[in-house]
Image (cartoon, rainbow, N blue to C red; front, side, top):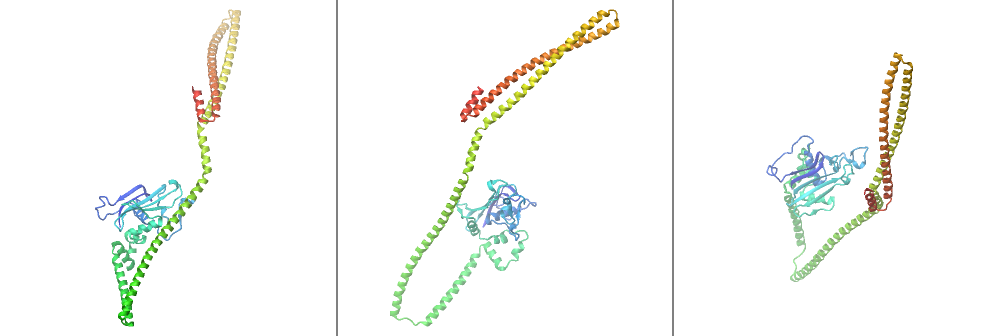
Amino acid sequence: MRILAIRGENLASLAEVFGVDFDAEPIRSSGIFAITGPTGSGKTTLLDAICLALFDRLPRMDTAERGASIGRVDGDSGQQAKYDDVRGILRHGAGTGYAEIDFIGQDGRRYRSRWEVNRARRRVNGRLQDQKITLTDLQSGAIIGDKKTDTLQQIEKRIGLSFDQFRRSVLLAQGDFDTFIKAGSKDRAELLERITGTEIYSQISQAAFARAKEEREALRALETQLGEHQPLTDEARASAGVRLKEAKIAMDAIETNKMALDKAQDWYEITSRLEARVAEGEAALTHALEADQAAKADRATLTVVLKAFALRAELEAVAATGEKLTAAEKALVSAVEAERQASEGRDQAVMASGAAKADRDTKRAAYEAIGLELDKAQRLDAQIDKARTDLDDQKSQLERSISAREKTREAVMNAEAALQSARGQRDHDVRCDGSKSTRQSRRCRYAWQT
């Protein structure tokens, strides 16, 4: 068994997709090489990826402390994983991860073993799903193994090592090197035979010893039988030969019958497996039909939601028209108030102008009556000049008030026109919103725009 490549994604400290190709230069011709890096850089994670892809187990999680959960205590229990659960290697904040290796098996063929784990709908906050493992023959493209247990057995058969043997010989964890050194001679011999591929010689030796023992026992039995029986006469020997031929014919018939029974047994086993798969398929179909039945209410709700979404544009147009109408009404109120204030200012200016004229006339009459009283006349002149100035100011204010009143009237007229337009738009939108089809609604909008 020789590893050709390691690939993975979102395992422990290694984020995104990573890969190491041992069959490419410069690693291919380097012989011995080292994996180095600072603490937390992912050195052990590369070795974990090998164990996950081959055995669905991790050396650093294979401890006696089983049953403890990791994850947020106040969160969903589906977000937690047992301490010895290999799914816990999935990187925090990732919705999916995998480990994959290419290797050459004991039979010389190339294989790809892939271990994969996902969260529900691949969301980072989804519930952890069961891990999957597959074995693919890269030369033929065939998938080997049906379920996870069968796949793991097929992988172990092709690499020739169990997880414990692989961990004690090929992949020694930190501080566990003395475990191999201190192992018993029988365990070390078994490991070395599997690593070097010489276990066949041990098997041949055991088979030869067992065969020799059987032959010796058979020889003793024959010698015992030979001592118990006297040699047969010619007639007895001929009769025994006839019986021997008959026995051989009967044995051949029995062998033929046995072959037929073996074929029937194989057919029965295949039929049993197919019936089991049919039963699983029927159960899956029943589950799917139940899920489909349970989803009817959701589909009805979805139909109503889709219809509501079709009317969303019309509802938004009605809401916008209502907002425009409210704004126009506020503008109209403001314009009316401005016109009222302008009228009051104009009336005040007119009253002030009349008062100023009356005051001027009174002062002028007083000036003519007093005549020579110069000082008083001067004071009156000053008052007259001030009155004139006030009059001019009041005239200017009156002109500004008149101009403001004209502008206010124009603003009021514009606001009334906008209000009438908004009310017409609102009435039109209400009529269009009550139409039964989307096509009629579009025609209403087009008619209003044109």
